[in-house]
Image 1 (tube, helix red, strand yellow):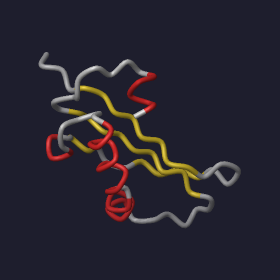
Image 2 (spheres, rainbow, N blue to C red):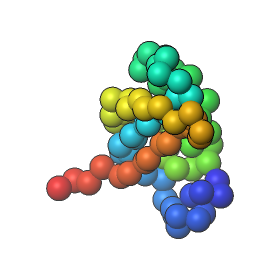
Image 3 (cartoon, helix red, strand yellow):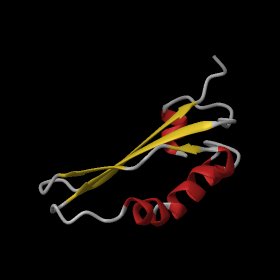
Length: 84
């Protein structure tokens, strides 16, 4: 909810595009579908925070994977799909 406030999100996104980059500690990469499934609670949290109404209306882009031994992390970028 703090991130929504910081980004001045006033209304839930009606249709969101979600991009995920998973930075592994080693070159032993998790399957992309398992990464997406492991983030289900995160997406539910985004719904609870008011970022979007429901994750059923999200477009999930293919999960990108990379290695960062010093700083393993997950980066999630959410943007609104424009009607253009």
